[in-house]
Length: 158
Image 1 (cartoon, rainbow, N blue to C red):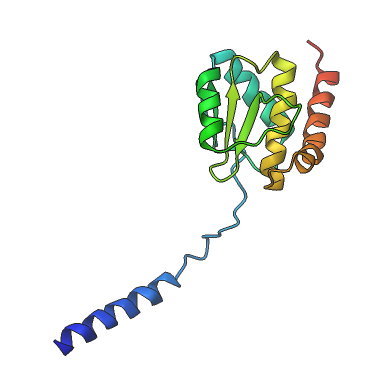
Image 2: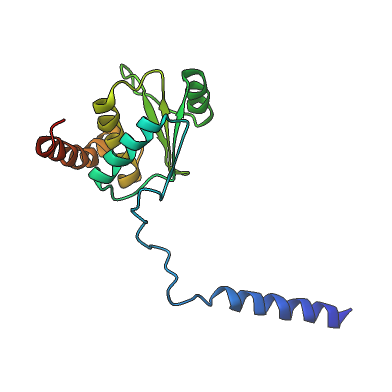
């Protein structure tokens, strides 16, 4: 019995030592890929997806979402309830960000026009950049992103 116990202890010791070995190019805080395909967009029409990818590329956010999901209103409400979304009194929610999964949910029935999509996406990217659910923190980061969108609109009026 004792040789079995010692062999288990030996193998566990080898496994622990192996965890400490990391390839020199592997880094935990690696810069997130900023290409247009570094995240997925689900449920959007082709035009919406192109517009959103262009807007996000223009904003150059510090942190990209992993996925952006366009959902109908009933599914949006369900997701908000499942993630225990807190909407401040007097505010309507068109989008929300789940920080843990870096997912942005967009209510397709309420998001508005193309300009409002960029405006509110800047806010959601602000939540990701600040890694905070605070609306004030998100707005601070969003101001920089909105400024970049505005500069591009001035240069390239449609």
